[in-house]
Length: 324
Ligand code: AMP
Ligand code: MN
Ligand code: MN
Image (cartoon, rainbow, N blue to C red):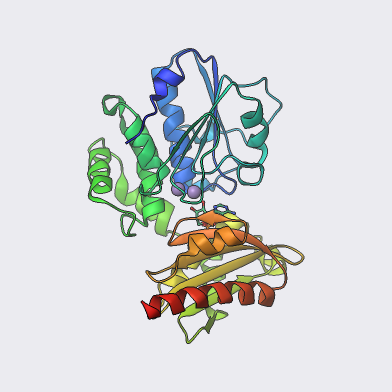
């Protein structure tokens, strides 16, 4: 249960800012724009602004997409600044960190188990599948309309793998049902934001699958893409979404690793697992975070250094599982 009364906390505010994590995913974009729509609707006259790194174009149909500020200008301190789907810390929320530090009141709403809570008011609920679902719980359902339902629905499907992952609960499905009753065009949204890939994205995915390597008795799989290859395809990190899930879909795989090079001797690492490995713990060990079945971190070293280090942790967990 959430203690937070959102409108009460915002009632004296004149300027409210909203942000989420760097490289925003569907849940981050959906929850930020859903909350933005709701506050704009319920608090007429209050200036509400979303700050995010430029999200992937597939989210352009969510109302408010065009209003997102990705330039992070200098601003007077906000009356309320809200961080969604992330811990509020310098590395994770990028340039929005400066707004969070100076705001008169700060609110953090998240579902990452790795988030210890940040700001004046924290609502961190790891048992809930998406931050968009948490926003659903915070709003007055009588204020839902098709646009707001669309934003939250997109967020929910992205973090639950279209209601497939184990973070989907009966309550999640009930909320999803309520959202589509507002006329959300769900077949098209699921196809166009979740499954559809551009030709280049499909080529990179194909190449990554081809070059993948299995290890630890074929129970784990890793694949990496270097900076040169990304540049060859004119690809950006947001073009790599879905690759790690595809690796995890392979029969017999307990743990999948996808890495892309961010710098000389630096990789962004995505981890996915079945039931045996808690990847949140592994990512947290390397300074990142996430959920038990999906987590990420940034690691330094060569490809082999990274894989060796990760492999030790995975092996330990697999051993522990097999002993119990
Ligand atoms: P990714 O593999 O980047 O899609 O991330 C999987 C999950 O882990 C998402 O919920 C991310 O928000 C989270 N995550 C990824 N990288 C980090 C990080 N460096 N710190 C905290 N959480 C992360
Ligand atoms: Mn996210
Ligand atoms: Mn999320």
